Amino acid sequence: MSVLSITFHTTENVSTDWEKYLTDDLHQMVENLMEAEKYILSEVQSNMISEGKNSNLLLIFENEEKREDFVQIELPNITERVHLKFGENVMVFTTYLNPKKSRF
Image 1: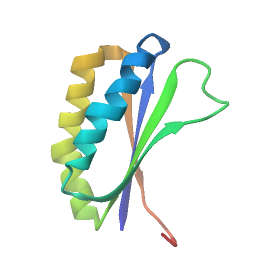
Image 2 (image 1 turned 60 degrees about the horizontal axis):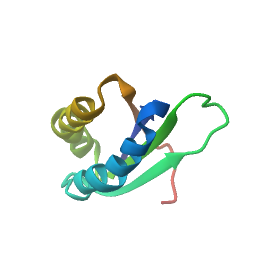
Image 3 (image 1 turned 45 degrees about the vertical axis):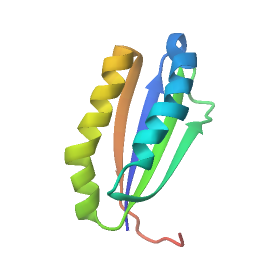
Image 4 (image 1 turned 180 degrees about the horizontal axis):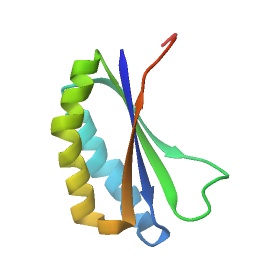
């Protein structure tokens, strides 16, 4: 199992448009991913965020090779689409999660 976390930080002024994009467009892109076995698309609730909002996409892959294929091929496409629509109002951060132990 190999895991990737993608966080989308959204400024307040595009929050309504982002919410629609997240539930419609981004969700559909994720549903069509061949590499990811499972995913969780979430709204991040945190006391540490004082401006804007975070959403997270947690992707679970069969192995590191499939995760790396996604990072090299699909992630740039998703990031480009987000930036074309929202520009600097949405920042995309990726985090590689390398499980030490799990009961998933």
